[in-house]
Image (spheres, rainbow, N blue to C red):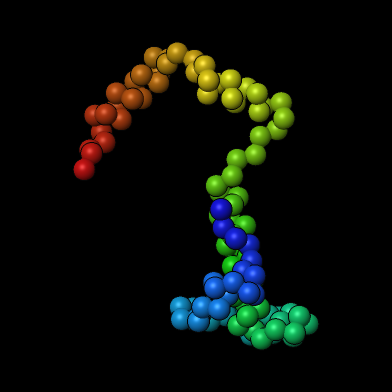
Amino acid sequence: MLATSTPKNTPEARKRNTARFNFRTTERIKQTVERAAALLGQDTSTFAIDAAYHRAVETIQAHEVTHLKPEDHQAFFDALEQPPAPTDKLRAAFAQHKDKVVKR
């Protein structure tokens, strides 16, 4: 799981930033980022990196985590423990996959 922030007193926080991003944006977006950074007392680079990092963590977590409603939880685990027998359609799909996919 990704950390959502880096505590200031850790070895990770003391590492020197060497990786770079270089991108262009509109004047409106630049001014908005500069204003938000100033409101937090940060420079624009720190603000932009922090915002991008937190959005990246949220995006990754949204794609890696599955949330089940309570009523679906038991059905999901029951299916894992006692899966139904394969249907003819599933057998056909596996046969088609075996014929079409080449292993390397």
